[in-house]
Length: 209
Image (tube, rainbow, N blue to C red; front, side, top):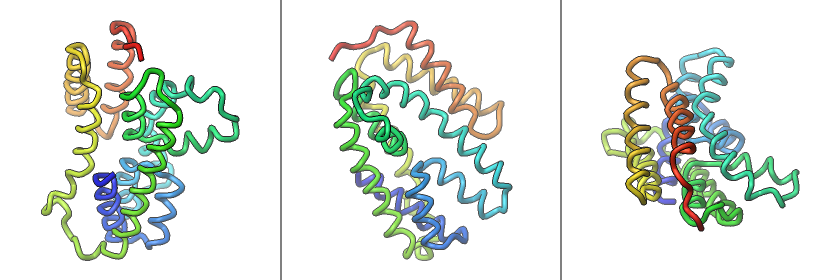
């Protein structure tokens, strides 16, 4: 939560510096709630990119949510269908990792509790970052830009329990880097995610709860 709060603050500041009004930043954070995509969308909005290009770019980045949703879906079968849209809206990497690390299949209430905490921390960070946006002109100078990758490194560390897990993680990293050197944009995230996930599903045996 502290890390999520920090990069929520960074996002709020960067969005204001890019020309968005605080209300617009807050609205994006509530209605979109996808940190990585929001970080990508802000400079595109500032540059006057076409709406279709922004939607397509953020959609590609968020395609990993299909994989997370497929893993979580069996745990939410007993939930009323009307609630599933709300649960789907708050899917995020941190809560998914926490829920999967604790139990297989994931406990739906652990995921919901974590999602509430993560979304609250992010929105609180945005609320703090928007009025302070002009005070931090270069977040990288203070190392604040590392808050986002630091969270993901911590999430990966939770999942690496067996030697096979390390193999999968290293394969994903190597494939993503190789693709990123060839293809522009964020296609390396999607392609590496799907390819390595499919391979791991075929090769690895799931752990029992």
